[in-house]
Image 1: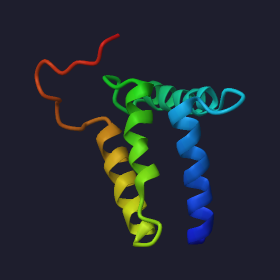
Image 2: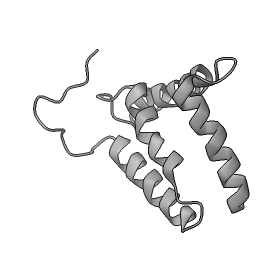
Image 3: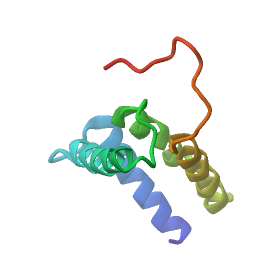
Length: 101
């Protein structure tokens, strides 16, 4: 994707995630991520102590990439950080920081 395509995509994603978007855009994004996340937890490949909302918030960093800079490198590092943190076997979280259910 070229820089201009990235900017357009970021604009629409950002609007959808911030405002709820039109026609339930946020709900669609959340539901899609929930389906993938739930499947990963069920398969034992993703941590079970996280919630879908945590994943959606963590993905927000992708909306802040510098399109004029090394956005591909930034995106790759952000995605690796996110995926590494979600995998089972990730070191235990700090005591007292359990997600609310």
